Length: 256
Image 1 (cartoon, rainbow, N blue to C red):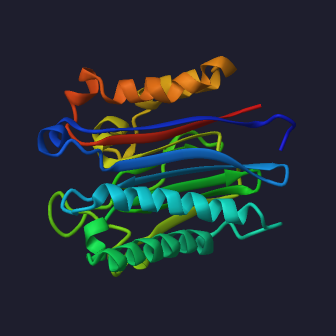
Image 2: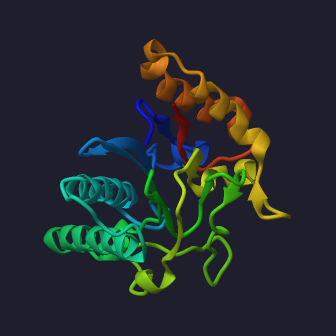
C-alpha cells in the first residue's frame, strides 16, 4: 500500500421514531475502524440490527459489533491470516459464543439477543464482505459501486435471519475480492428504501455520493465532527419522513 494511503471513515446509529414511541432505545449498532497489522492498515466495518421482537436486542447488537472488533484486533497480531470464508465463519462463531454465553449466564434464551450482522474487511491484500439478515453493504473495488447481497427476508413478511438462529452459519453469505475497497457503506434495514433501488437491486448512488464526497475531502480538524453530522442527518425530519425504524450506517473512502 502506498505511503500514507488509508481510509477516512465515519459511523452513526440513531433511534427511529417508532422506537421513540415504544421504548426509546436504539437497537442498531455499527462501527468503522482502521487497525494496523504491522504497518499494513486494515479497514473493518460492522453493523448489527437487534430484532424488534427480542427483549435484549440492543445488547445483542452491541455484543455482535464488539466481538467482531475484538476478533479483528486479535488477527492483527498475526503475521498473516486467510481473508476468505473461514474468517467470516470465525466472526459469526465468536459472536454466537459470546451471545449464547451471555444468555445462559443471565437465564435467558439466545433469541432474546437476536440481531442481524453485516461486515466488511479490507486491505491491500483484498476485501471480504459477509452478511446474515437484512440491511446492506455497498462497495467499490474498482468496478463502480455495487450491492454485495440482496437483503435477506425470512419466511414471512417483515421477517429476516439473525446471527443467533440455529442455522446462522448456513444462512451466512460471503464474497471475496482481490482488490482493496475504494468506497464502502454498511447499513441496517432502516435505510434500505433510501439506499437501495429495490426494483433493480442496485445501490442508489445519489444517496451515497454526498457522504463519499465529504469523506474524500475531509480536513483533519473536521474528523471528530463527521460522525455527529452523520447522526444529525439520520435523525433529520427528511430521513424520518421516509423511515420510522432505527437507522445505522458505517462509511469509508480510501485516500492516498
